[in-house]
Length: 443
Ligand SMILES: C[S@@+](CC[C@H](N)C(=O)[O-])C[C@H]1O[C@@H](n2cnc3c(N)ncnc32)[C@H](O)[C@@H]1O
Ligand code: SF4
Image (cartoon, rainbow, N blue to C red; front, side, top):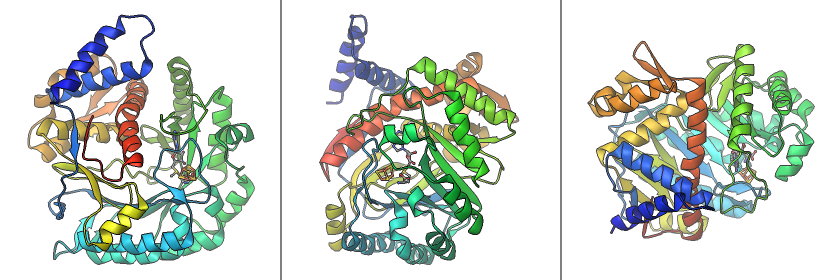
């Protein structure tokens, strides 16, 4: 059956020669060809509704935890994440279910499992500020967290009361969704203004190890000076880490904002990267920069992770699974003592290697020994040609056994990641927003 999708690629490839071919089709062809090349197979990534009640995480090293809280006071029309309008009772019922999910998964093994970090994302997880300590307490019954706890905040959540409660609960890293300090972009995005002076005062009163701020770049007509203003302001008012996310126009959102062209984006990203370098900032991942090397905030660059809550994903040695996007269905499954898993892919080895490289590359570095420790085979033996080619093209260089991405490599990764997001995440999330438990999905 899967040959059907490959046949459509061949057909679509022919379309490329015709005038007026569609961009979406090209993106899909490029990502499918890359997938086939890297996995050395024409088999697509196949996700099904068949799932494990027992999650095999006990033998996973460098395991991170993620908890999703899908509620927001108002909905931004550009946002692809799983969320709905906040309702106190609904959120409390959801958190009761979330705690049960943690207990079902955590109690599978008798020993406490050591994990690296814990991140709360959303939605707007600080809406649950009075229950964050309770959730952390339950997680700590089953997991030993060695590398800190982070939470995403809407700028409106940043007040001393919320920050003190979070700190008391054990949170030591915060990430604030500023998007821009400039009114014109806040208006473009349909958000409310961020009061930088208030943020500064609050952050000075309640300090955290990492204070990260999110910005969206490549918005229509955005200039380097606009971004420079945002970045300078962020560090001036108390951030020690910033994330610059390229704007992505998801097909299922109602956003009217159009993304920039590749050339404009390239110029802007290069200028911003050089500016960070000039200031002596450290590039901690493909889109994050920090003023001190200890300041990190990433819920993505981990070898394995366990996700709890609606839409939360779990990546383990041999499988990737994702929970349902429906709050109602999530609670119903938990009520019947069943896991809320919606789709699972069981990896073939090359597929897992491709996933590993894709996620590790966010951190701009791939240590050769880490890949070998994970898969039991040297990276150069598996992808010798690709590494050689990436070096020749100036995308990576090798330093003391580590493949390090160059600025050029980082741009193309950024660019390709956009394709990946549109052909994989967009399709997967688009489907899961419509159906709580789809039977099958091929990417
Ligand atoms: C869950 S939100 C952060 C916390 C909070 N909900 C807020 O909005 O302030 C995660 C981040 O994703 C980024 N984001 C959301 N939609 C995006 C899009 N279409 N393209 C690029 N980045 C996006 C924003 O920078 C946002 O801060
Ligand atoms: S950007 Fe943040 S506040 Fe806006 S809808 Fe998404 S999660 Fe909610």
